[in-house]
Amino acid sequence: MKAFEGSRRPGAITDVLVVLGVLSLLAAALWHLHLDDYQLGFSYSDLLPRWAGTRLALHGIDPYNDSILAAIQTSYHVRAQPFLYPAHVILYLLPLAPLTLLSAQIVFLVVVTPLFAWSLGLTMKTLGLPVSRRVRIWVVLLACVSWPAMWALRLQQFTLVVAALVFIAWSLIARGRQVLPGILLALATIKPQLILPLLLWLLVWAILRRQGRLIVAFVVTLAILLETTEKLVPGWIPHWYLAVSNYSDARHTAPPLVAIFGHRIGLVMTAMLAIAAGLALLRLLRSRAGSREFTLAMSLALAVTLCLVSAAPTMIYNDVMLFPALLILALEKPQDRFAGALRFLALLLLCWDFAAVPIAATAELLGGPSNFWNGFPFIDTVLPVLVTLALSIEVLRRPASAFIPATPPSAAAPQP
Image (tube, rainbow, N blue to C red; front, side):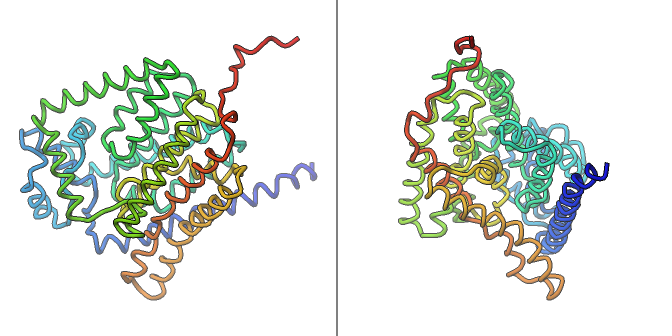
C-alpha cells in the first residue's frame, strides 16, 4: 500500500502545480483585462455591433450603413467596429436580439466557453497524440486561460465560435462522418477569411476521396444560410464587401510578414510562405481521414491562413486557430533538423506568450498601468509564421512515399 501511495505522489504534486499555474495565469489575465477595461470601456466588445446590427436588421434597417456605427458609439459611449461580418451571422444572434447588451454578453460567454473547451478536448483525441486523459484536461485548461483565448472571451469574439465549429467538424470527419461536418463548416463561414484555405483543401480532398456527401451538405447548408439572410438584408453582399474594404484601408492592417518587413519584401516573403505551405498541402491530399497526414494538413491549412490575413496586435485572438498545430509541435518531434529548429523557436515563443501576461500584470501591480505594459501581451506576430514554416518543411523534406495512404485495416490481407 505504501509503495502504491508513493507511486501516486508525483502525479498528485504535478496536478497541484498545474492547477496553481492555471489559476495564476487566470488571475494575471483577469487583472490585465480589468485595466484594459478602463481604456476600452466596459461596454466594448466585438459582439456589440453584431448584436445591434441584428436588432436593426429585424426592423428592415441595413446593418452596414455608416450611420449605424455612429449611433452605436453615441448610445454606448464606446468605440465600436462596423458590422463587418457576413450577414448570416444575424441568424446566430436572433435569440440574443431581444436581450439587453449585458445579458447577450453573458449568454455568449456561458454558451461559447464550454463549447470551445469541449472542441479542444475533441481535437486532442482526433490528433491521436499519446497523452493520457489527465494531460488532455491540463492542456485544455491551459489553452482556455492562454492570452489569445482570454482576450477573445473578453471581446466576445466569434473566432471562438468558428474554431469550435471547425474542430468539431474535423473530429467528425476523422470518424468517417460527412453530412454533419459539412453543415458545421458551412456555419463556420461567418468568418470566411479564417477558413478559406482549409475549405479549398477539403474540397479537393473530398473530391479525390469521394466524400460527396460532405460537399453536398456544405453547399446546401450555405445556400440555405445565404438565401435566408438575403430575405432579411436584401443585397447585403456588396454592402458587406464595401464595409470590409473601407475598414481594412482605414486601419492599414496587413499580414504578419508585411507588418514586420514592409510592403514589398513582406509580400514576397508571404507569397513564398504560401507557396511552400501549398506544396506541402498538395502532398497531403491522398491522406485518409483521421490519419497523421490528415491532421498535418488540417493543422497546416489553419496555420497558413493566419499568415495571409491581417495581423493587428489586437487580433491575437485568432491564434486560437493554431491550437492543433501547436499540439503537434509540442508533442511530436519533427524528423527534419531544420523543422526541429523552427519547432524549438515556435515553442519558445509559445512559452513567452504564457509568461508575458503574468509579467505585465506584476509590473502593473508594482508600477501602475502604462501603454507599454498594456501592449506587452500582444507581441506575438511571428508565431503563425514559425508554426507554418515548421509544418511545411516537415512535410516537404520527407520522401513522397511517406505520404502514400496506408491500407485500411478492413482491406488488409487476413493474418494467418
